[in-house]
Length: 255
Image (cartoon, rainbow, N blue to C red; front, side, top):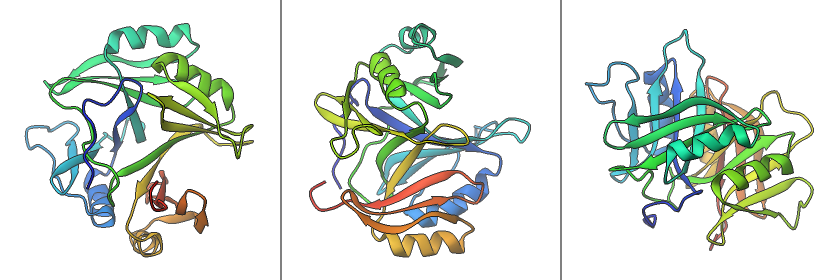
């Protein structure tokens, strides 16, 4: 189980979470699916936020959102050194601030924005909590990908905001771009012709895609993309019981 190099470099994905109206139901869906453990802090009566762990190390968060508020699907948080300074640049680049920088206890500071294409994203300024701590293990985030009709314009927005190098994928130069930090790809931008609402979607690594899909279907999920072998591993697409999109992947050896 490889540990992440912490702190996460600025501009890389550092955390992932979701806030849902039926928080306990979602613990019951995701924990068996990915082998997660972790319960809500009893003192947190508002969001009942539960940090999920793999082998005792944090990988993602699930919380509760009151039904009168819109559900927050899986959201990736990009590492920033100064949340206020980053938030101030969002309108300058054509985006919208939806949550100014604020404290998450002594763990860090977070903020939320919407890119010019309409996709929501998060920012995380680490204090005592760096973010997820492991990768390359079933139950961990393997990749984060924006699905949008804006394509290169969205890639350029994130590149400018987070200081990432934007590279077109050689196999899909007109429809896929990657954000590179320190020479390493950290997230992807996928241009599509149509999408109901632009959004970031997580790829969760699993031990066996076929078995995980069968388990997810039994727990109320729906298949959006059947299991298939790709150059980037064996994959499938699902929506969880609320309709939130996720992807499953077994990466090829060495990737």
